[in-house]
Length: 111
Length: 114
Image (cartoon, rainbow over all chains, first blue to last red; front, side, top):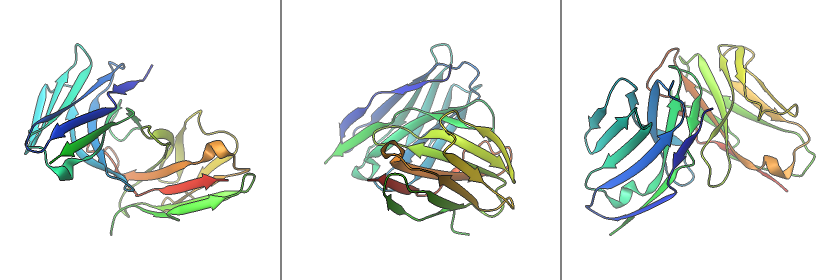
């Protein structure tokens, strides 16, 4: 079946790196995404990775994918207070298809 | 085009009443999705359209829920005989066909059933 799991909370100090982890169960997942949700707002796509990739870097964001362990991580370098939000991992079996979301990781950045 | 627009932003209704939400997608996007998000959870898929055709419905979408996209542009989601368990944020998203870059989400409609 389809299931995506994330740890619920992460607290870091400003300037440190944050690593948010996600595991998924469906080995057929083709695309994996990270979304950010700020209070009272919709979801903002941060980055995505195809299942045939191991790593993707985009400015302060680094995504690592371990297909064997079905493990996805998002690293945020030099975390800022503005990065405080809930981060959702999501998987999709096809392009343009439905997304299966994790329950979200609340990132708290302390000055 | 300013993105995906949802109305109303908030809706408070009494149990048993019917409610309808509207979503206006990005104009060139032919796929439109509805999700429901409860407090402390990630969004759960409800249904999606390609143009005016409803291609998939979740089993979460009980008989009291119906969604339409009559002309392949805006969509409505109606909940009949609302229950307290329907209280949630209802999110709409749209994407271009075969878009691998994820969707664009609206800000959602928050429903509170009292």
